[in-house]
Length: 361
Image (cartoon, rainbow, N blue to C red; front, side):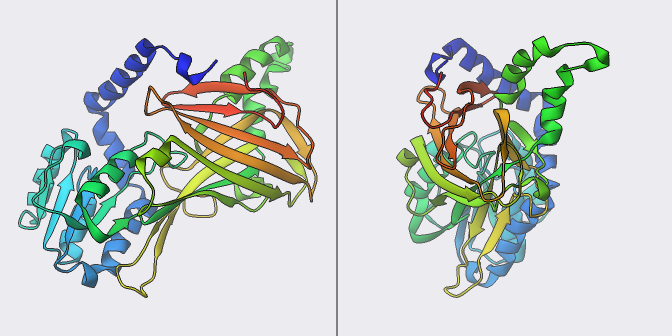
């Protein structure tokens, strides 16, 4: 099955479902989840605080501001000339109340509009946004950020985050494999192995969001495979991003799949000032993103010193723009691995795992 074969009717149904999901009151839950994410929220707070002197007199845009927490940090921790809090959803009405409640209405102005249609009083010195999703690009909010950058950021202005990296590691996932596959071998003493092929199609061909990778399940040292420079990257670049990897297995074990996460980096406004990082990986404090697990059809035994070499490609769907295909091409020690090639989609993301030399289905 190819991603373009997904019917328009199904895509429309997914989009309506997403809108309904927010409209039915879950918006509050989503904002609670993000605000409760201390590593995420504290990082943005620290970015503002550490740059407070340089932000004095500057104009800041907070794109996709949600509750306006970053805008409020700017107004209360620095002395900017103005903060433009931009939010397309109906949350903007509540954000205006929060701005007033915190006594920031003289500095923060809320604009309820999409980035593509936005009209501001003038250009900004700093554009800050929390646009990152699972696998870094999930939902492609980044496109709106780049459009706003090209239209509203002054020449030489600052982007926060300033750059972002997609990080990858081959891993073990015994618990997930046991729960999803081995369960069918002898449940209650009965032979249910016939259902393993169905379980493989249902579970292993889909990415697992909110996966909590244990550091001891990393088979190698993680590697950054794709880096985005927020000053130079263009909207057209988002159509297809590719990264190469070469891992040396550091301990013998079972290779169940790849785990992916991201880090965002915040450059200082001062020339020699320290940069800050938000890292969503297993070696950092857990965030609401956690990590994303992509499992192989069947686990592969690997030995210390083995080489896992290949590439990852993120391909944006040309029709349904929130979708993407994630393709891993890989081999161990230069030998093709016998596994199944799969294309699938799950919610608003798609996955395709295939090995070198095997034609994807």
